[in-house]
Length: 290
Image 1 (cartoon, rainbow, N blue to C red):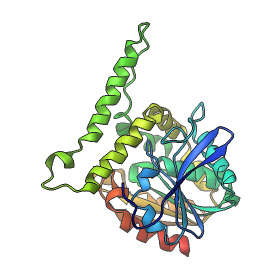
Image 2: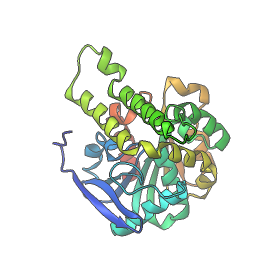
Image 3: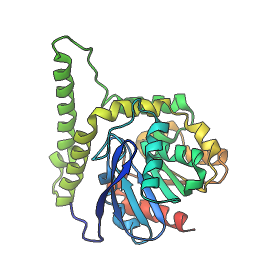
C-alpha cells in the first residue's frame, strides 16, 4: 500500500487490557476514526490522506481486530468503547472529534453519550441498515449481512467442528480474494489489488471476533444512546439503491437528537470508503471545522 501523499505513522497505546494499535497522520485538532467490522485502520486508507491536512487523524484497530489486543469478554459495545476511552487516556487526548462508521458509529455513539466531556464533534456514518434507530428493525436489516459470517457448527468430541469452521472461514476469505471486479473488469490497477489485499488481511486478523462483535451490535440500544448525545453531530446516511426499501433515516434520527444535522451521500454499496472517499471528506471536513 502506498501513502505518498502524506506521512503515516504507526504505534501502540498501552491500556489495562493490552496494547491498541493505531495509524496516525496530520496535525491539528484530534480526529478519531472508528471502523466497521472486521476492519482495521486499513478501512480508512483512502480517507486518511484527505483528512490529514486538517486534523491529527488517528485510526485505531478496534479491540479484537487488526493488531490490537483481544476484544473484551463478553464482547459488548460499552466494553469495547471503554477500551477506546482508555486509548484516549493513554494517548493524552482529553477531547477529540470522532468519525464512526457501522460498528464504529455504535462505539462513537456510546462514547458521546457516556463520556460527553471527551467528544468535540461527532460524525455517525453508515449505510441505511446501520443507522436505523429502532433496534428490532435495524437487527432485521443487518441479519442478511451477518449471515455471510455466521456459520457455526455444534461442538464434536473429535474437534471436527473446528475443521468445518476453518473451511467456512477459508471460503469467505477466498470470496474476498476474488471479488467480481478482479474476475470481470476489462482493466485492473495496483489500487484494485491493494483494496482486496486490505480486506483479506483484516478478515484473517479478525475473523474470530466477527460473530461476537455483530452480537454486540444486535444487543446495543442505539436509540437510547442517540437521545443522550450532546455533541454537535452529523448523521451521514450512505444511500444506495439496494437499501432504498428500508426508508430514509438521517432526517428522523436528527430530529430525535439534541444537536444533529442530517446529510446523505449516494455511494457504492458496501465500498464507499474505497470508492467515494473524496465525497466523504468533502462532507465531513466542513462540519468538523465549523
